[in-house]
Image 1 (tube, rainbow, N blue to C red):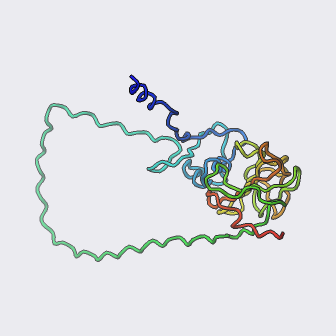
Image 2 (cartoon, one colour):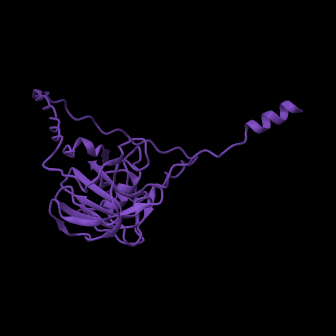
Length: 252
């Protein structure tokens, strides 16, 4: 009896973790950039899966595919062709074969030109054309951790102190719709780099604004756990990278 109870208890436990939904329903305030950021993909990938071209406009209620599929993602499932009708029991009639045409002399086979090898695209420069600067004054309270849920650094400071754009670019998100980021600003610097500024007390820029390097974009806020801080992230082609590899060394 005891062995049966132990065996039965061994089957209990938390259910297997399910993958998140393959589709995201657009909510008011969402942008393609914020959605791609939230799911950890490059905005161009999400756009291509959903056949959305520049300037990447989306609308509330729209369903976007946010997980790639093994055979190539599409925005909506394609219609499956109808199966062929079953064969009847009556055997089909065999048509009389047509007379064979007279044999012709085979034309000389042209020599095929070997295919030109596809040249790989040149690797993008590590820094690109972006010149980075610190987004605020303060020391790093938490460094980059690729296994953390929020892959960036936390810079300590005081509530209300200025938060600056780490480089020039366009504001592609300004709001509080991404869970765990508080009031957030995302700036697109070029086709390679984006940066994000989270946990702000107040946002000073709106989506679509062109931002200059070092322009004040927000006021520092706080979290209940860590106090006053700025959460800062850099993503290169959608992938989180350690901001300390790009920011200049601080003078202490």
